[in-house]
Length: 78
Image (cartoon, rainbow, N blue to C red; front, side, top):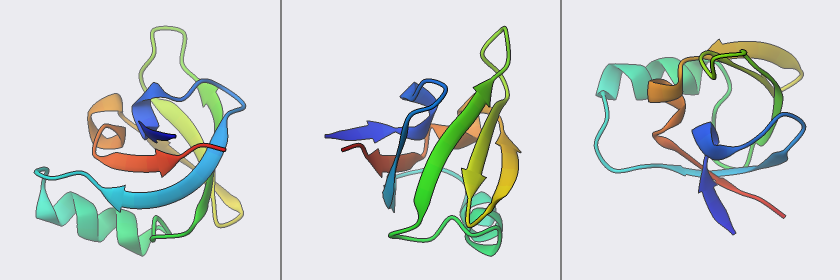
C-alpha cells in the first residue's frame, strides 16, 4: 500500500518509493542530501501534538519535516 509520509502515524514505517509530482525542486534536492533516497527505510518516530512537524528516522538519524514537505514523499507501507 502506498501512502504519503504525512499520512503515517507514530511508529509506522515503510520504504521510500518516490517523490510525488509537483513540489519544490530545491526541497527535493535537500531531502536527497539528507538520505531520503528511493529504497530507504523510513520510520515516523513522533508527531507533534498539533500534527506539525513530524520526526522521522532515515538512514540511522532523526529528521524533522513539516507536513507540507512530507506530503510530497510516497512511502510503501508493508
